[in-house]
Length: 367
Ligand code: AHR
Image (cartoon, rainbow, N blue to C red; front, side, top):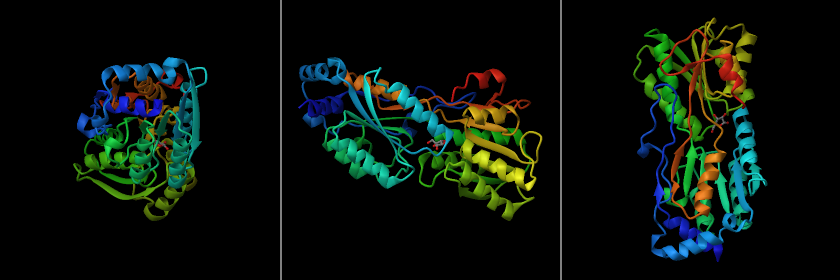
């Protein structure tokens, strides 16, 4: 059967780890061992001879001109970043490009996401792409996909599962994003005290865990910094506003830095501070750090309301499509691909870790 043969072909493909690049200015690419691993040669014992593999590749849907069916289990629609990421998948995995995309918005619900993946398996789609809501709980369903011979690509976020259970990973280095935010803050404060409040992303999401880990690592090197509190705003504007309102009740007058794990949380936090008469940004009392660097987030950065905005690039679908095309053709494919990230700071700030915002940069930002 084509699918079984294709699975064998994929399992025996020479998998090469590759780093496309990561970081603006001085942000270093993650060492290969820190990046999520991809499929190993667990199925090597079943390996088809090279001639069979070539035959199988010729039978693959792309080669025969058939439509390639792809299921994308998307996190939800919690943020502008997510909307841009969804649009990017719809653009790349279009009928015009030879794909039939089944995109399920899982509304940030783990159970819905597992069900979506199981439905993709039942429908025997050619490929499954998962943007995992949480890092945990993936082994069983990934084993089911593997047993069904359907290649799986994990995208955007990371998972805890055994790397032999999926075929490739594409995403950003969120720990590096957190480190960049911390390094920028240290540079900006230049030894001054920081009393920090953190509005984290969704609990259990690798994007939140990574940013916290990276930022905390830098914070630990600064005895003049104090993290007063951290709570999840669930990557939403409403969540950011609610958490900030509660922070203001508990810590009004005691904080001078607010770190938001994404732009939407930052918008909510700014609304809460506006309502409380607290000033922020380059001319205010509170420094705001955000992540994502979406169009509107960069507008606030250009306006000096957000001091530093560390990008998490949502434009990842073309990289996923490239991996799929290589699998289709029986070529070696990248086990791990890091998508480029940059960081941006408000006008008037010079940084070795980030680019100073301009109108031109904003004009070039489509999402
Ligand atoms: O996983 C990427 C994160 O998820 C983005 O930072 C956030 O906006 C989204 O909801």
